[in-house]
Image 1 (cartoon, rainbow over the protein chains, first blue to last red):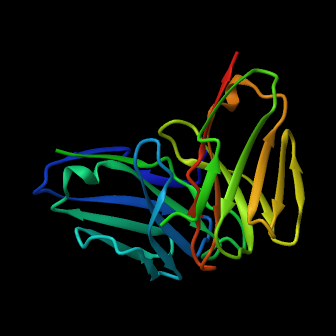
Image 2 (cartoon, chains in turn purple, cyan):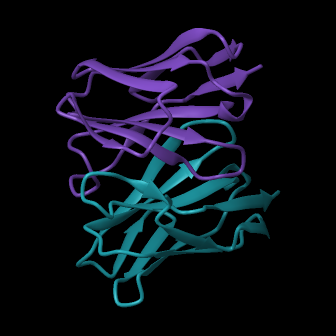
Image 3 (cartoon, one colour):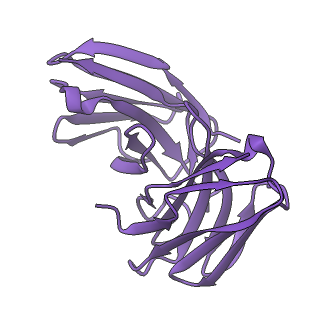
Length: 115
Length: 110
């Protein structure tokens, strides 16, 4: 069982909607990540938060807005998305940012469909 | 951007056979990690090999690392149908991120 919880598991939204994806971990990890994954492709890094501060933004369009309210929570706010944004959105956490200190723990993902 | 390439892109074998997947990366690393993903699910960490290690074992998994060639291989011995999944290598090229290779889709036929 994963110790990173993502909600919702599935989300269908129109291009004018505003929605949010949520991620929660209680392992005391200080780094949290958002990845986007299209079918048959590897996860693509979107954002990294380290100690609740945004440390990496991979030139993600502003229609994706991350938020880290505290060390256990990570949100991804969605607004005015395009159909090509449909994908599996994966949240992950690690003790510290980067791989030096060990593995990433992933949630099961939120499957997003934009109509 | 992704860190590297993996080959083969897809591999189909019979149960009981060994499966070997390769990964190449572009920059210096602290360590290299391998992950597994069942279709449409989250990724699960398999094994980590540090940059000063050359080989590591975990159960039926054997990982090698050649930093001079910037490459790694994952060997799964005595494969089972339940090993059917996608396998990704991952590195931290900027020391504060984790980036994944293109992945190998493994199918183990019963």
